[in-house]
Image 1: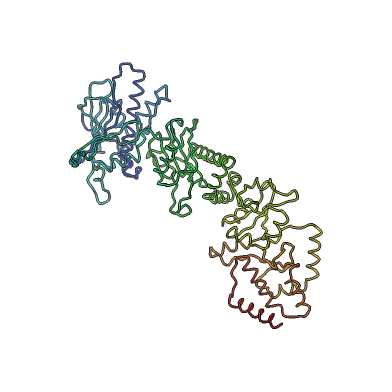
Image 2: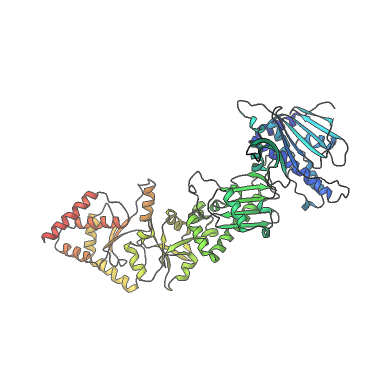
Length: 624
């Protein structure tokens, strides 16, 4: 048969596939093995109805001829005749697998991988010449298809058994690319483990190993080994899998010394069918909140590895999840490496997100100890998920959130907080701080707790931002006890406080004048019990938010600080006496303000001057 030239359009497409569409040369072996698996699937399906079908041992064999720079991938699948070689290999983007599946009445029996008809041509990324020798099932003649990418010819050939050999003439190294590694058994083993480990037929190859003798000597020998594990754990019946199997797979796959906190193994059938084996880690990776962290979620299509870091199939707020998703019918593009952003992918993502959420909800309600461990490790991720995209996902995640609470210092959900609320309580009270120990020292906390209110402890940087997005939960507003608008006390107590502020207006105005560059206002407060003074902020930026922004070098942003004085404290009576005697209040005002800064965890401008004022006050009191 004379050499046939590829048409101009086909030649251009072939060149594009070999040099552009497939960006990773490693995947050539995946594509050819997938085609071999398809051929074995077809033969298996035919054998179910063909009583005359001969017995055979289905397998794929890889042979390396390093001297002649050849790699041969052989299978004993259904094979191809002359016309099929012409149709499937001579016509680019024609898929015999697709046609076979379309013609098959019992499609659920077919596990056909290669349905796009172009994967075979990825072999030209590493080869300058490709031969395909094939003998079709129940046929006597074999044929050979030969191509150098410019054209092809089909010749009579010799092959004793049914099946196909794909013979790759590996290119020589160039300045840009190295092809020699593909002639090493170690490289082939690596590629099979990565891309084709779960092909359900054995992939065999001769590998060099040692033969140890009784006298202690050894010699190198070639031994045929199966390179793939064939059946993935997630494809097995759950009844056959032990907890230890799940743990072993997880710890080996993700190099984690700790067992997973939760295993999620399930199967979904429908418009987008898939099997998933997902893990919730028990420990947060050290680099989880850094730019180096990578999502550990792998995507397979019918057991064939497609990609790492499958960000397209899980929301970012669940990026702590690890595992594999294996879909039977994903719409992949022709290189298999780029997922199409279509309805099918969105459906898959929604389904996986829903399963993760329901698992977390079940942990929260039934395995509280494990859920709290999870939340310690990854709770901040859920909070960021609520905040991001202007709170688009807050309704999805809000009931998964927990905060440490003044009620027994334990985690509570917002729903649980509401169940604890006093009958007259209008708001959800919270206090922000660096840690719980420091929050407990806040002067503002004392009376709120004494009045029987529960307070949530906000210790994550994101918490203050979160309230600006959530705003309320089931009709109850979030209210910081560090803000000036805290509504405490009876109406009678409020009236008495207003009257007291009016009676001491001159004193308070004087203090405000002294501190005019530092505070927005000075007032008396009913929120203090044993402490003399505290700082709060108005309804805009909080003091804790100011600290956060300062840590981000946004020092031009300041909270409107209000200094509140305890009218029941001895220091207030001292101020009143000094005002009557017309004594200078400057030192006392500065000291009280600087004390309130220190209590709030804010720096003072001049520690030396502050120390000197303390010393002068001590000397003055001693003399008096």
